Image (cartoon, rainbow, N blue to C red; front, side, top):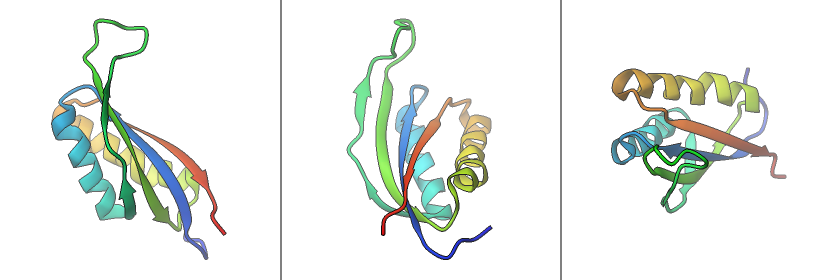
Length: 102
């Protein structure tokens, strides 16, 4: 369902399995589906409360879309997560924060 105006969304991106491969792939797939306006620096961080997991590479991007938060989550983000999981068994995750800018 398309909406009349564009929503701004901040999307957090993180991976701890082949992140040097998976994070750029996630951004590539995302920019093929919606307009990516800005990408943050990415930082390495330790896994929280699980010392045996590899470090995470985390960052965020600002996007514009006419999709609702639910549509963006299920029609774009989850599909990219699923696609990358099939390719590389990556637990790539997106976390979205939405706010309409007027």
